[in-house]
Amino acid sequence: MADDRLRYDLLIAVALAEFSYRHEAEDPQLAKWSWQLAVDCLAEYDIDLHESIDALRALDDRVGTDTIPVENVERDARSLSRRSDGDS
Image (cartoon, rainbow, N blue to C red; front, side):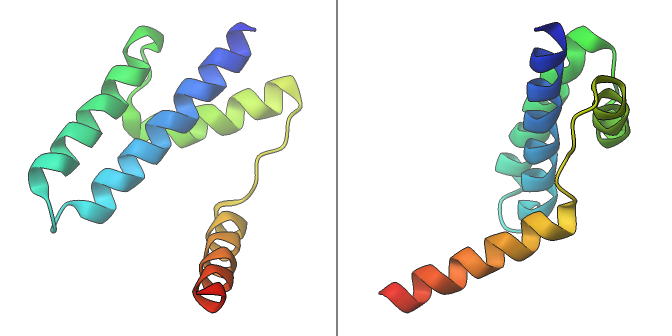
């Protein structure tokens, strides 16, 4: 259960950091808030945000779960986007 919560918090932190990075030029204040939320997600674990992906991989190696490679997630997101564009 503790590993599930840590994994969940790591995933949220990574997503928030990615959001912050991608939207920094468009909305610096929103990017700053997103980054701070990501940092806050990891505060109780004493994990630096820059170490979050490595921590997630180490956790998955320890508990024997598989993560989806980032390139697969991005590819799947693009294919979903194309499908929804075609449905309109």
